[in-house]
Image (cartoon, rainbow, N blue to C red; front, side, top):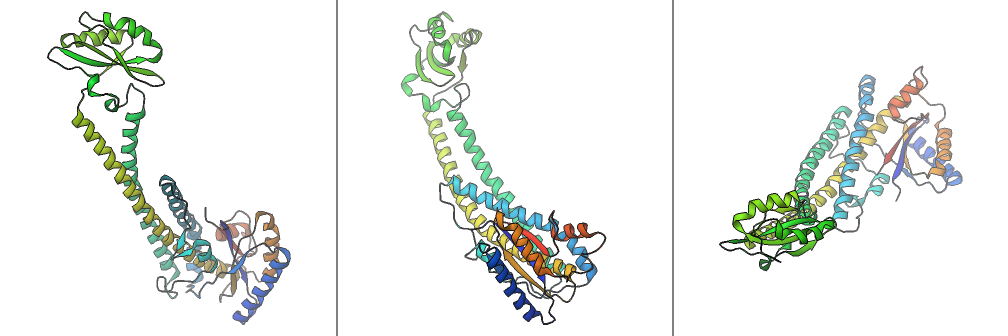
Length: 380
C-alpha cells in the first residue's frame, strides 16, 4: 500500500463538462500508461458543491492550508497511538479502515457522504463542521491517553521500586520471615553495602556497636551496585548503630516485615496490570473508530479543498477533473510533466498575476508551484 498520494485537478476546456471530463480522463490514462505505467491512477469524484461568492472563496482559501495541517496532524497522532498500543499488547499491526474499507481504498474510491455533509450547505459551514468534529476527537483523545498514561506511570513507579537499585527499591519481595529476628530485646536491620565494600562490612559490622550479635550478618541479595545484608542487634542500640554505619558508608534501610502489607502491594500491582490492559484495549478500539472518523473527515475536507482551489484557479462554472495518483519517487517528474501537458492554457487570471508564486503557495500549500491544483496526502 502506498502511503503518499497526490490529489490533482486539471481544467476541462469543453463546454460539455461531462464529455470534457471523460475525454480528459482518457488522455490522462493513456499518458500515464505510456510514460509512467507503474503509477496508480484513480478518479477523485468531487460533487457540485455550493461555491458562494468569489470573496467568500478567497477568505476560505486562506484557512484551508492551516486547517489541513491540523486535521492531518490529528490523523497522524491517532495512527501513532494505535501503533504504540498494538506494540504494547504484542499484537500484529492491523489494517486501518474507514467503515470497513482500507484507508487507501477509501481515498481511491472516495464517495461524498451527502447525509453527513449536504452539498447545498455553504462551504464555510461544511469546513467548520469538519474542523469541529476533528477538534472534539482530539480533545477526547487527550483525556483518554492521559488516563491510560496515569495507570502506566503508576505501574512504572512500582516497577522501578521493584527493579531499581537496592538503595531505593522495595525490599519486601527479597525478604523471607526467617531472615528477620524480632523479639522483646533483639531486632534485625537491613544494611545496603556498596558492592566493593562487602569485605569491609563483614570485618567491621560487629564492632560498630557493643550489642551486635556476632556472626549474625547474612547476605540476601546483590545487584550491580549494592549488596543487601542483615544484622541482628539489641533494640536499645539501633540509633547508635545507624550513625556508626552511615559514617562507614553503609545505609541502613528502614523496613518492617509485614505479610499483610506485602499481599496488599501484590494485589495492587495485579489490579493495576488488569486496569492497564482493559484501558489499553478500550483505547485501542476507540482509536480505530476515531481514526476512521478523522480520515473520512480529512478526505471530505480534501474534496472541499480541491473544489475551492479549482474554482479560484480555473473560474466558474466548476469545470475540472480531479484525480488521485501515487507516483514513485523516480516517476514524480514524469507525472508532473504529464499533468502540466494536459493543463493547457485554461488558467484563470488569479494564476497568472503579479503575485503568481504567492497565490500558488496560498492555494496549493506546497513549496513548488504548478499550473494546476495539486497537493499531497501523507498517510504517515
